[in-house]
Length: 413
Image (cartoon, rainbow, N blue to C red; front, top):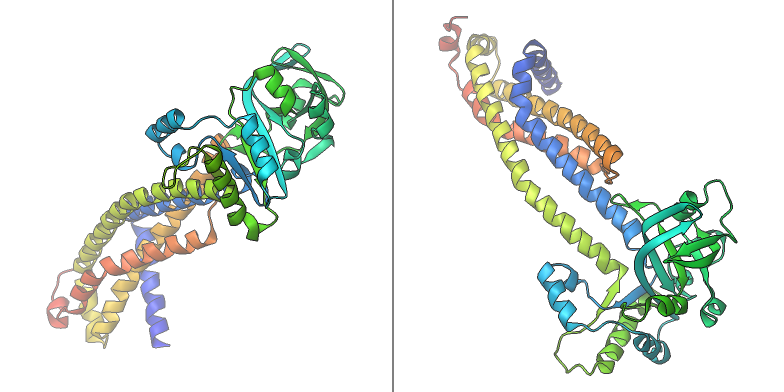
């Protein structure tokens, strides 16, 4: 009970100090506020982007991977991409047929190609729309769902039909208030009939994932030629089959390209997990880089709190002497000042947390950059700021506890 009473008294003194010296308290806690706000904003950004990437970027589908011209490692640097462009041949139709006919482990093997172009209907035109050529089974492997109509089917490819499945953004902008099904859409100057509309996916880092048109892959190749590299999608029978299926596809591609043992692959085998890991590595690098900034702010904030507490010891020397003269022990004085410095820093953490939440909300609303503050970050922010106050309050508290009560009583008020 005595400890609780001392804790309540010390807390009251700390809060009273904050109220009586608002500007000084704010300047004292500025370093803590900035460090906590920076920490929370970075955590919110990293957590939000990682979750966003997992949900929307890595949308290859369950147990699906792609055989592409470039690997994940090729895409991590400009020089790596330049070297891979020189080294890696495009994935062509014959590569797709070879894997389709020789792979034994997958449940499905599909293919797609993409480019960008202008689409229009009537007087409305849209530029930089993703145009994809797809095999029919891509619809069964991807995470795109139909809102109306149907996906591309085998018969469309067999006859090189001029049909298209469109994203919700294209549908909304070209056919606002109308049913798009059965209407005509011009893609690259050629007329297609809309047979399906996909459900909205959303945006990734501000980039819409619903601004696309999908047409039969055979039609795509007839229009755009075979110079575009294809992406071969392979669906494993289940999660336990992923590694074996990827290795089978890799070995077949190496054999087809006559690669010697020990030589690098001239293609990429990319799974959704690899894309997530790539973005995690990027966001982790950002988080690690910000640790230095946060540490500097914390040290500055801690030093300022220590200086203010030392000044407080001087200002309250007579008070400390009087408390000791009526029975307060060194431990009582020590705890009082430690609690005060911890509460001061903790309040800075709370203010920084509120500031970070407001900033994160404003950034997400203004830029569509995903921001998500986990509850663990709240505990971390308050805990770290309180520990900083506790650590940097040790010396002032120790100095106060060692004051001689007689000499302290003689101190002028």
